[in-house]
Image (cartoon, rainbow, N blue to C red; front, side):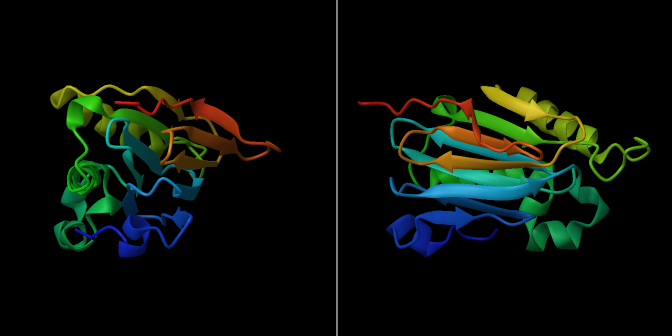
Length: 181
């Protein structure tokens, strides 16, 4: 599992970019975790408002069984292995599962307009099945369609901002609410 960037934890970077098949976590209140160009890929944010720690996953494919070696090397590439890796990394920052605020974006039929492969739909189905098995619910989502999306998680508040292709400004996907206690 890729470890969280030390600079993101210690606070030397304000914006941490998560690439395709990557993940990052942070408890630095000045950090913003971002991922771009979510087509059929899924962007998953998690945030614990008590410890003010969050994470972001950019998963490309639903099922790691197609390439177990790649999944072992880069678990964030797949929904089924990346979600667990994301949560474990957040737990290392003292985040607690039942407090997590979860947002999801992406899952479009972006590169497969015919719907033949349905990667975006399969990614989201895998995620919802996995969450159901673990008693997790999604607080906000913007999934499907034919648009590319960008998301930003603001670690200070848990706010998740969304930008869809064709839009001029970001919108708030999830307001977030950092705990005071």
